[in-house]
Structures are given as C-alpha cells and as structure tokens.
Image (tube, rainbow, N blue to C red; front, side, top):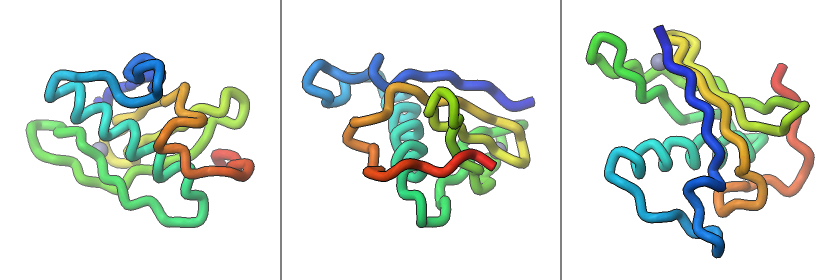
Length: 107
Ligand SMILES: [Zn+2]
C-alpha cells in the first residue's frame, strides 16, 4: 500500500519565502516536495524524480508521474508501481516554481 501525502509548502516557509529550519527527516521530505514542484513546473522536460517509498524496506525507485490538479492548481504526483502519492499546494511563486506560463492539465 502506498501513502498519501498532502502538503502545503507555505507551512514550511518563512515570511521571506526561505525554508524554515527543519529536522533532518523533515528536510528530506521537504526536498522531495520541492523537487516535485520543480519538475512539475518544467513543463517540457521529462520527469526524472524517482519514488522514495520503501515497500518492504526495499527502495522502490520507480519514475514518478507528476501533473496538476487543474481545478485547485495543486501539484499531484504518484508512483505507478507502489501507489505512493501526494498533493502539494502553496507552491506558486515559490523558489521552485519554474513556470511562467499556464501548465497543462493532468491527463
Ligand atoms: Zn514507488
């Protein structure tokens, strides 16, 4: 079974938009979310981010599928193999937002 992660990047940002100090585990997760946003907003480039879930303590390592919720404009990502998935909101205008044009829908 995969996990479902729902995160809002703004919760981990200081008022000046820099990341707040995090625990090592929190930092690893935060890096994962921001990489997802960075990849999602680089519309023309293929995804290179791999699943960090460890089903049965073995790294999954499958290429993630990353897209957008066209209604809420959240970044959605999922692992087609282990079903680890998540939703990231509050990313627009952050350091990791590479987009300046309208993103395409999640099809
Ligand atoms: Zn996986």
